[in-house]
Image (cartoon, rainbow, N blue to C red; front, side, top):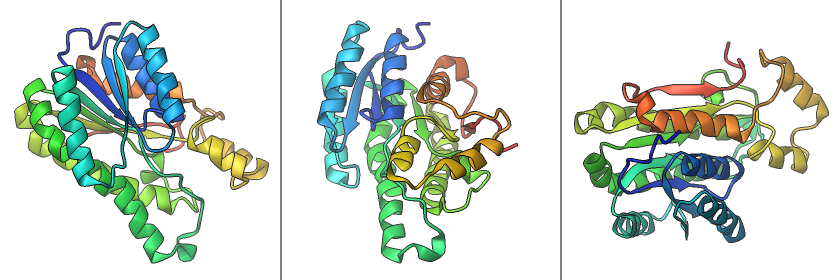
Length: 256
């Protein structure tokens, strides 16, 4: 499919060096888009992703970015628009590692930090991106979590900030639709890769917890980063041209 082959400019993917971000970059490249991807610390991962995109015959550039730095985010948007001649899509797949904690055990400062690293960080990027997205009649897709619909215990540090992200995206859908901008979210459920991989490695999700999670999923299996990338690519494309302000949960039926 050439969903993006006639689009002018580039897709900007935050968190492009991570498990989900990597899958998104690769898929939208195969579907015709050049890619500008951001990373925070994983420069080597970003280089690998850029090589994969180049192998698909598309252009790709990695940029180090701390999204909590509003000035840096604005500067990056300006550089990307100038370098690629436009910006047709912003895909937000970045976010901090989120430990599993009961909210009663979460320090107030930790919650504030997660809100800053997720909701405020996305606004830092989208605010300067709006003029280019308006010109392109572009699309915004934020990767959030299925936990904003059905809450799993100890997931507050993820669900609360991502609920704020979803409201930000919904607000932009309402306000920017008159300029042709669409804005949607994809809510992953339990995946085999990405953050779940890190939680398993850290011991925060043991075999008992994983089996309990599996029983709560209608399909009785975990998803993959590719599942999320497919949903993101669809919502960013013209195939979803009359969809905006929505959250598509890709969760195997966890929310049923």
